[in-house]
Length: 390
Image 1 (cartoon, helix red, strand yellow):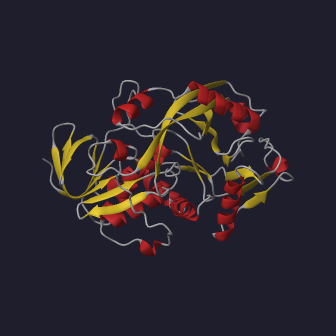
Image 2: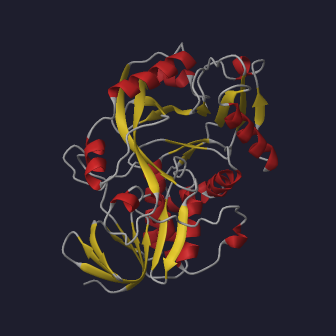
Image 3: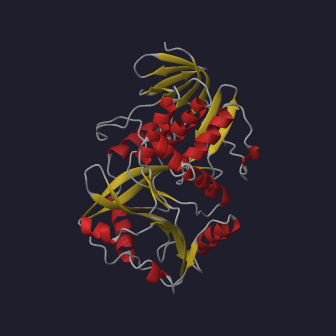
């Protein structure tokens, strides 16, 4: 049995790693627990993490004021994280949100424009007249309005998680690359047969918070199996798209938004644009469902639909090859993260709602505050972060 710690954070994802860093840098003894990224996802039996990827959109713009605050505060700390960790996290390619001026989806458009104005987020407002000249790589449908911000772009979720973990370790947090197999009061049982006692436990296990038996009361969440599609481009095409922003947009005829990332280099050395977004997709209700989904490559039909939207938006895109991948997204009942101190010994930190990666540093900071028993009502948010439990 290891020496007892003040805090054990279960889940080495983006929120959990950030939470562990803030706890450790505040002087607490901390254990950050969770397995490494699998070397072979096809044979790996779990757990998995959607942050095992090279690209996520980051932006201050949002359809909701609190989500804009989460991301703005996190973006403001990227430079510090990069400087202190030595890792490259953020690429400032600009970020844009676009949608219809009227009809289905116009509520989305008006929401992000309203939030941008209300929070004084520096941005350019574009429409049919200005979009073609400003963003010639895109062909938007008639009646589109958009907001573009210079401070948006992309993050490398692997690098961001690693930076949080590295700085947590520098602050004397212990990193334990094991899965937790059982939780009995304040004692954690690990996959290697060892145990660990903690004064307080933070559950930051993402989708598994809803599907695992570790948690004494299941949070109300919907965990969806999502497909992402990748379009490979060569060096010449990537250079042509050097000024391409990350994009959240509603294609013509859809009532929901898709997301698109500019060319990013992946571990295989190739450059890919990534597109994703679905209105409805299969629910993942247990650990076996999640494992089976992540061992595969998503839904080929969904992938082809996404690529059709990409070709419509970027008709001149010179694509070398395409493939699909699997992802999962967790939506809470409230639409906001659950950051709730459920007892003197347990805090819940989960619920990215499809937008948590870019905000993970702020969400981890709030999680650390709640775990320490501090009040976060004065942090300037409208939501109270309370968890809805089954």
